[in-house]
Image 1 (cartoon, rainbow, N blue to C red):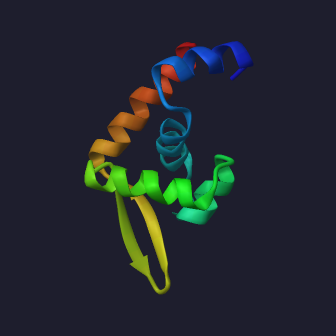
Image 2: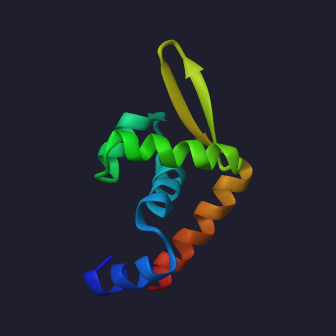
Length: 91
């Protein structure tokens, strides 16, 4: 996405939360919060704070695997990510 499109996108969406959903949807590998933070160039603490809000909204789920909490999109989260990605592609 070029800079002009990114600016327009950011008018309608908060960049990091939107990119978190799109990244989770587009990733085939299992992700956890610190890996997601690296992928979207965000701090770990900010990602965790947003993920907690997304969990309350039933957009993501945490699945404990040993010491790690793996992230998965719920059906609702996947639908939202799909729509955000379509808007991003239009821009």
